[in-house]
Image 1 (tube, rainbow, N blue to C red):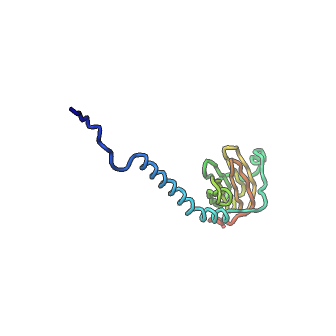
Image 2: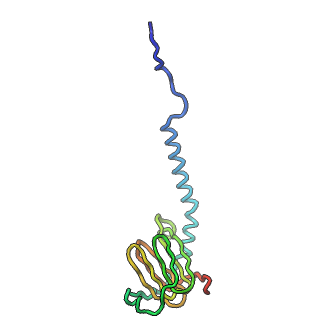
Image 3: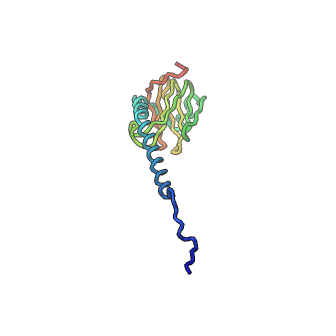
Length: 156
């Protein structure tokens, strides 16, 4: 007499590994598609924000504390604190390598800052661009300032 314990049942339908593989393909396709769609915009933004000019005079902490202009405005952007005396500020995250790379850095333009204080994870930086526009770039915790920019803000 033969006994049947029900072991002959066969599974039908899509198996779990196939579902996981299909989901992974869709996620990768979405990420690559999103990157390819945004890349031209990031390149254009990086070109627009590629500001060059004469370096802003840098100050030591004692030199900063001794000068008469004081910080009246503060703004926090990506774990960096920007302080300035007057005018307006506009900041953007810029993709490395002219918008073509990976990772981002912060760039802020000031319409007429007078004095600038930047606090990053690497320390404090002080600049004295005085009147006129200035642009501060923060890469890897280091702040750099040039006396140039196109941002006019509300002060001009």
